[in-house]
Length: 254
Image (cartoon, rainbow, N blue to C red):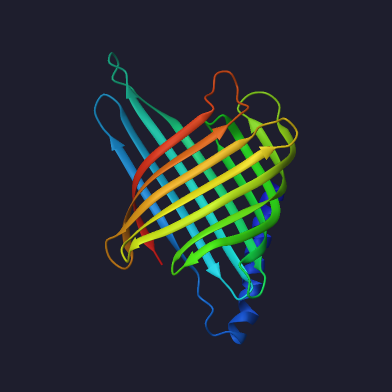
């Protein structure tokens, strides 16, 4: 955990260092951009439950660097009532936080870049309590037209997995990812992210897919429908390999 958090802090600090001199030399450098996504689900009746889901995505395009950060959280709590005594009991059924930081060094007059990436996930009720990875390698913007783009990146890395039960594992991985964004119009877009962590040591191989359609309400607010799927190959007997989540959320963009 400390190693990954340290890498995330280094990526953040490097982006600030990159921005300061570049802003003097190039007046066209874009400021930070991103969005904050929040969804809340409330259930009342025989079973009371509250679920809060949030994602924060930050992006920055500099002269020689492309930086992005992603934060995801989920918290769900249920309340049950004893039919005899009337006593209510609260218990947590979902608790997750994920942190990702990545910086790409862009070659001049080229769609190619070198990237470094750090990822940390803590899922209290998932197949793995903790998952961490570090990866570095080659990236390429295969397609770019206006705001539409397709990025591909791949390279070696290290991963650490701590299952909900049993011993933790660490070893070498091969990381590969694709990011696609397509704007149907000025007010609607589709975004697809695919990420693979393939174990080179025979341990857990993971796969993540994030699909989202966003429709703007005004310049700042939007509605988003998303489907997230996460697969782990090496899970405990009482756990499922695939987790999926479908959500409708409100998004604030800046």
